[in-house]
Image (tube, rainbow, N blue to C red):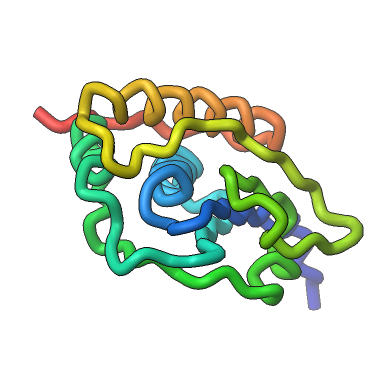
Length: 147
């Protein structure tokens, strides 16, 4: 009997207050670019009722569809189950566990912003995700932008 020696895939949790814009875009990018090689989670300390429609529109421009996602509540279990926890303005309400890798990405909040203001936020998130994939040793998959 042979032992499965494949390394476990890394897991990343994105957290922002409402889990409606920044964290959903980051999760969408990591899901698409990670091509199944990274376990992706997102949550919010005070989840909104729905995803920011402008964030959805901005992601669709790059061929990433996050329309079916829903804001989820942040739980200690989600943090415990993740190797990397990336916060985006959730402040002191994010639970911290020893031994986890934490990053805080300072990003403008897309809430209430038009598409022209959301595109640079989206592009900043994409660049950070590509850097994260490199740090995790995962080769990014190509994106196929919408026609």
